[in-house]
Image (cartoon, rainbow, N blue to C red):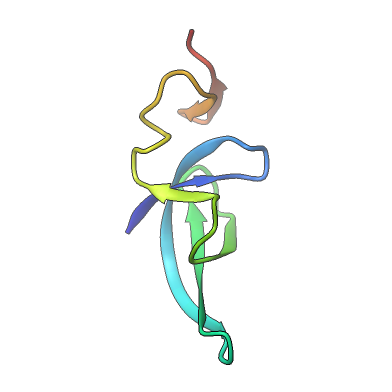
Length: 76
């Protein structure tokens, strides 16, 4: 499933949920392993992380920095 994900540079980009895991059985918190579309990097996020959003929620906006064909752009 494709989603919007904020990378470590605070730029929203697209990614895919690679898989979900139950990391802490006693707390029943699901973690998602996300693979960024712009690179081969994978990262783990808790299910309720503010760094993930539905596809297009942030990446369709033109007023925030984003990646386009591998380059960081900001349109005014």
